[in-house]
Figure (cartoon, one colour):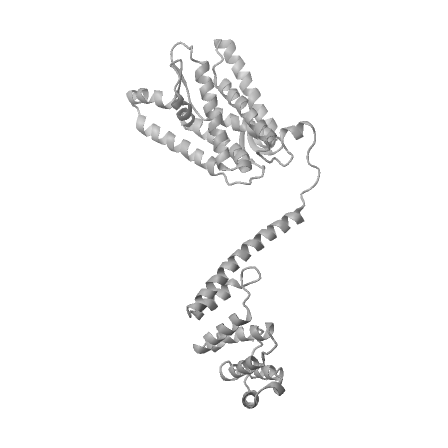
Length: 396
């Protein structure tokens, strides 16, 4: 016995449909068990609606409902384990809605074929379970990803058990050969083809053409590892260009960041228009962590500085004044003088004030500005003489 545990096939879509089908099967099992209980009358009444009945006409509703019925908890667990592994492989390549179409389509087609084939059967018999649809999905996985490996728990005897990695191709073929063997034994004993093995094989025979057609119509990308390439020994030989992949990922991230920054700039402008300078400053600080950060033009910076000065928020304004000086140095001398004044009066940074004043071209300043600068310089030197010490702050 081989029990699948995990698979190394790449997954490009979250297994939404696979998980949904597993949950639906589990809920259906619990509800049916709760409703029927030990009542044979209820079971008999629900049978025509839930199970696939042989030899009693055509009933399309049974083609769907019988896929979600199971004969016991182990029947359910076994089927759901196989559905999980092979659902990941198939849904991982085509997404949830295509996978759902494939799964339900195979299951319904197999049930329809089975019921039609058994029309002449004497006396009603029944079948149920998701295994035929799952075998169809297994056949699709065989066609699309024969070389991907399934990590399996194997158990052939008490002394022969453990785990092993088996290619999907060999795993599926192992179970198909297993089913053919026991179908042959049952046919020899009863003279009837109708058996669990027969139902599994018919599911696989419906699923395999589905996988082949989707490859031929380029409805799925198997990255050169499909059954045709394996058969022709024409497998990809080059490693993926991870540098190119990284470049593409970087471009996507940059595009996403640019979109966020553009939206944030519109919100920033709205805050400023509403006079909500604090909100604008907070948003700006947050956006500095996104990509290259929000870029404000000169008018934006001037407006922020004026708004903060009106609120006497000198510390916050200093950073924006520093950016204004750094990015727009031409004509920034009045800003340097004002920032130097703030450094002395509000921030206790005399050395930084003197540094700013040293960058001013006083030949181009008015008498008032020159006098203010001399006053600031005297106070800064006095503070230094008094022992005022400041830490370096590159933001100023």
